[in-house]
Amino acid sequence: MDTRLEDSFFESFRKINALQKEIEKEDKNSVFEDMERKRYDLISEYLFLGETEKTIVVLQKFIDANAGHLSFGGSMLTLQMFSTFIILLFQRGYTDRIDKYLDLFNKCASEMNGGFMQPFKESIVNYGKAFTAIIRKEEDKYDFCLDVLNSLEKIYEKEQDSIPLAFHISILDYKAACYMNMGDYESAITSLLKILSFEQEGDMIARRMGTLRNLSALYERKGDYKTALNYYNSFRSMDDDLYTTKNYAYSHFLIDIYGLSKQEIQTDMLIEGNKDLSGQILRDGMTGIYNRRFLHQLTEESFTGGNVWGAWGAIMFDIDFFKAYNDNYGHLAGDNVIVTFGNILKIYETSNIFPVRYGGEEFLLIVRGAGLPDLKTLAEQVMSQLRAFSIMHMYSGVSNIVTVSAGFSALSCGSRNDFERLIKESDMALYEAKHTGRNKVTEYRR
Image (cartoon, rainbow, N blue to C red; front, side, top):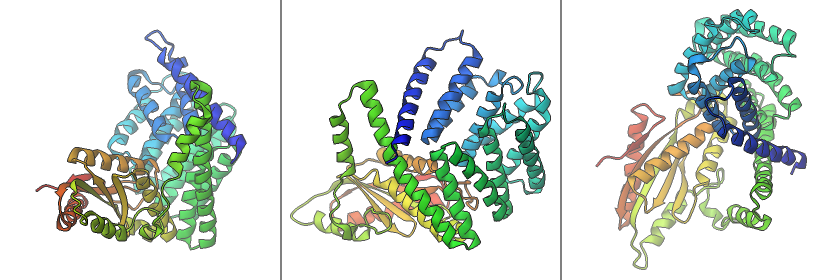
């Protein structure tokens, strides 16, 4: 484990704790510039830790609370925070929210009047127009978008002492997305490699993981499988290291701040980390969750010796437009999606919840003693967690990231036939979700 990184994470947790306390003390007399700086510092720490969803929450609350008097003229921080918010909404596929904030960003840019940023008004206005066109996939404007983004890169080179590096990276992010939309994978890779170099210099480990994953997908699309595999392996290794290191850092933070004993925390980590490893024949080789053979054993055991089941629930998931993902990003990237979703479901495994890879890109959660409201909440949580990974999918018909559809049912099961009926009902509910829009949860209606 990287002790230097662990120390950095520990300090980041301490800074977040201090900033949150300062923000809690704010009132109507607080100075806007001070409030803005605290949010900027807070989201910088969250992004360093890879806490993207928390970053979105902080930014949305701040932007909504100050929407009436936001200005890009006097503060680079306002522009940077707003553009970061737009990028994160785009990367997370929050299509239901993004249009509102695109319009607000462009309104703030067009109404700039005074301030040290005023000389850059035209560039900022065009920046807003460019990433709006990229996000909305307005193909006839891509050349304009690239001209704008290239000109902004030149401005950054001249003014980099006063412009944050994160703003330059955001420009490269949009260039990569634009080239991807155009099918120019070589240029997209060039932009991503520039981003990777900045991330390595700036120790942006959480952000670097997403870049490595995207590079792997692009090289596979070009047919360079060796390079694709190298980037993919780097991503997986970094993902494992980050998870372990962050957990240890947070444990030490709890010891330092709240006085928890090290033994208490280590015990909890052992309980979580040492789950039953027996019965590997009942596990899917790729994801590590249960397979269909397990379902057969579960029914065999449940209908012998006078066992009676009672209330059970089932949630069937299917990855949206998975074939299009495989066809365009390659099978290596497709396997990564399967493994990622399997890891999400694995989190929920208990003595009452059984995650199963049902086949291909279909997954199943069997839940003992669950009612319909519980199943819906669980399905929505799983979907939200997958969205948080922000796996790019420009060929999806419902989002620009990988999503899933889900169908669920609850039934009192007293026989093998009841259990088989439960699974069939969840599958029928999934079918309805897929044929009424996808990226949604549907309940089986009797």
